[in-house]
Image 1 (spheres, helix red, strand yellow):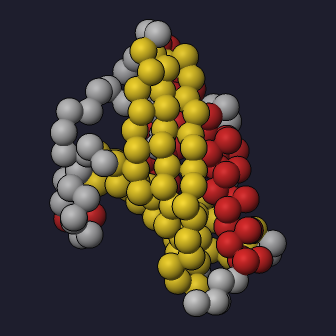
Image 2 (image 1 turned 135 degrees about the vertical axis):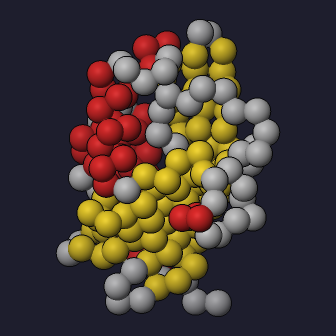
Length: 160
C-alpha cells in the first residue's frame, strides 16, 4: 500500500479548516469552500446511495446551503439561539480515490453540541469528494452518515 502523504496532508488540512469554520460559526467562509454544483447530504438511511431519490435529513445544493446559513445567522433556525457551541473532532482520514479532477476522502467525525447545559455527541462517517483548485480544494460533495440517523434525532440547529 502506497500512501500519497502530501495529498493526505493537504486534504486533512482542508477538512480541519472546514470543521474549524463551522465550530466558530464562520458560515460565509464555509460557503466559499463549496463548488457551485456541490451537494451537502445527510442521509436518513446510511445504506442508501441514491440520495436524490430517497429521504434525507439534508440534501442541499448551493441555494439550500445559502438558505440554511441565512437561517443560522438570523436566528430563525429552530432553537439556534440555544446552542452554546459545537466542537468537531475529525480523525481517521483516508484517501479512497484520486484522479486529476477529484479526491475522495473518508473520515470519522464526532460533533459535540452543548445546548441548555447538556452535551450531546453525533458520531458519523463522512465522505468528501474534493475538487483540486490550485493549492487547495472545493467541496463537490459531502455525505455525513450519522451513526444514529435512523433513530431519534433532536432538533438540529447546526451544520454537520
